[in-house]
Amino acid sequence: MQEQKLVNINPIEACFVTILMLVGIGFSIIKLELVPHIPVSIVILFLLVYGVIKRVKLKDLESSLVEGARSGVGAVLIFFFIGILISSWMASGTIPTFIFLAFDIISGKWFYALVFVITAAVGLGIGSSLTTAATIGTAFISIAGAFGMSPAIAAGAIVSGAFFGDKMSPLSDTTTLASSTAKVDLFEHIKNMAWTTIPAFIVSLLLFFILSPADAGMDYQEANLIKQELLAMNLVHWYSLIPFGVLVVMALRKIPAIFTIGSSALTALMISLVITEKEKWTDIPSILYSGFHPETNIEVVDSLLSRGGIESMLFSVSLVLLALSMGGLLFGLGILPAIISLFIKGVEKASVLVCSTAASAIGINFIIGEQYLSIILTGNTFEAYFRKAGLHPKNLSRILEDAGTVVNPLVPWSVCGVFLAGVLGVPTAEYALFSFFCLASPILTILAGLFNVSITKDGEKIAV
Image (cartoon, rainbow, N blue to C red):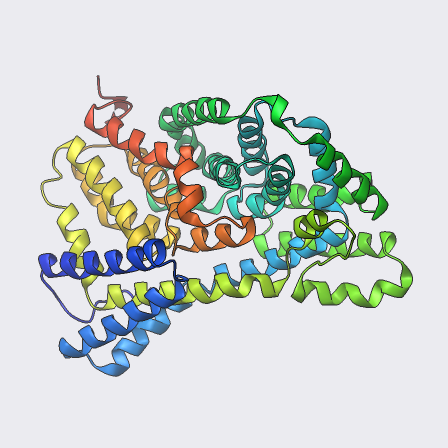
């Protein structure tokens, strides 16, 4: 994202333009049920016209668009590699084996709570919410469908668990980014997050326990039918879990995401050669682009396993690039800086400072749709104010995670929201209502600021 804005505008005008933009996008997606690409594209055209009215050069407007999109190149590459990973894990039997094993372990009783806990553990281990949701999460969505469970609640449990793991894992890029932006030791940052994260985890777990249906209503006959078909397709083997082991080991060694995902995919492809008949080997490379699409006599199995491939990521990638381009214009036209300036007024008081920082992180997620920029822009803006107020910077780093990292999947046009809706097959607006951990985290961090709970000043917590 570019560093300099092209024009100075009044904060009130910036708020009016932003509200108009968000209402238009929200109405189009929720009420008119349009794909997000359309309203986002219209907003881009609107902002271009607005820029011309403000007498900004067309060349500068174009540069803002390009700079905004450029910030998403890393995410786009990861999206493509995750598409490859999912299709290769399908062909190697990795995800089918997870599904088979999960059917033996998980029953309808406490289903959503178990999905939340298991996904959280996996996310904590590999440090990536998107990878967790796209792999283990895909398996759980398949199981939910077979059990007749609500896909929206199941997706909410997956997203909640995945982002708990992402937030608290020392392997996570957002955790590292938040601590480095606020200039805090990584493990001190993680320890301090426990004040809000553990209560959010407990509240979420209790809600998922309550929502889990009685065991008696489950359709085990269909589940057994799926298990038999997976065995007949030769997709269930102990060695099919090796690609998952490769992913975990490389993540623990802090190997960059693309290399980690790519290595796991290559391992899966080699295993797929072992379990696939030789005359069908030529079909394997094509699934990396088009995805895994088995042909069986059981429709539900075809539906569960038909996933992955670069092609499946094109919808997400195109929307991410459009959304980030829109963010580039919002920054270049001075709209975003003007709105942020509203949050830094009267922040001498600790409670006001905490709430302003959280509101800024949440607002940037909704306006730009990018969690990294939410962390960086908010962190850089408020760092000096935390020092001036005598507050320890780990307060800032915690807010960046509570109101920045975990809010992104709740925004339909955000990078995470678009990706998760695509791989889980559940619209963001539907699963967001059940993403209890992501909803509770910003609320708890704001309450902590209002009541001076766990707020550290000059090396000591402020008394409640």
